[in-house]
Amino acid sequence: MNLVRAELERLGARRFVQLMVVLLVLAFGVTAATTLAGSHRPTAQEILDAEQQAAAARSELERTHQLCLDRQRGVIRVDEVHEYIPDDCSEVDPAQMERAPVAADFLTGVFTFAEEARPLLYFLVAFLVLFGFLVGASYIGADLNSGGVVNLLLWRPRRLTVLGAKLGTLLGATALLSLVASVAYLGAFWLIAQLAGRPGRLDGEFWRSLGATWGRGMLLVLLVTAMGFAIATLGRHTSAALGAIAGYLVVWELGARLVMEILDVVQVDRYVLSSYVAAWLNGKVEFWDLRACPDGLTTSCSGYWSLTWQPSLILLLGLTGALTAAAFAVFRRRDLM
Image (cartoon, rainbow, N blue to C red; front, top):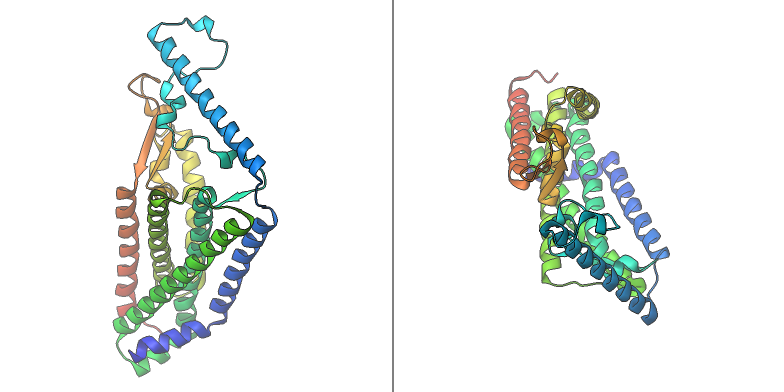
């Protein structure tokens, strides 16, 4: 317990951690202030006009969908339709759309919490992921580079215990900070919606969906934090983690992707980590690849394929576990002087 308390004090005393917390608060503050300045409470007439426009948009979708079905059944000829109608009627089927047009889509300069909460949550997760990776890498990297770990081992000469305490303290502190930041961040925007916008439809389904996204995002934050810690431990320096992530992005996400596209590799997105991160956060993502249909687009192959959260979670857990295990194995035997 004394070791964990000592690590908490060391973590909180690091100037880089303090700087990152300040930058995190500033980024959230600027986002909230910008949203507040660009929003206003809509008048009754604005709401009425927006609802009418949304109803008209839904009616237009239903009309287009019916035209598409009539054309497929042969009720009307193709040359009788003087507007664009997709070949796949599901593209304009209101029942199969992720979200039908709503009044918030037609309100200009009005912040609607129900419509903007998810994009704002993604923004929060992105900042916390960056925070966790940088803090995790610098926390152990600086100690290894400066000899602080050696001094700590003189007091507690158990390598795995010390490294485990550092990682556990880091993950616990990151989880607590993420929880506090999430409550403050989303609470601020909920308050903005109450005072200078519209709350929107905040039913049980909305909160369940938002809560699931938040939970997946927080797990991603912890996994990336552990990855940064592990890579810096393997490389004995903070820059090792920064170099590894930069190298991966340039060499694989950009370079290898480009080469695979030139070579006509099918479903290129399946081979890059960013696709699995997106699938984990969203629960499921769809990609379009014409090369996925060997005989061209047909009724049985539309070119769309998807990734779900299950394989994404397995990959992320496996990668984090492998890096962490390697870091502990190397730390146990390596000369630290």
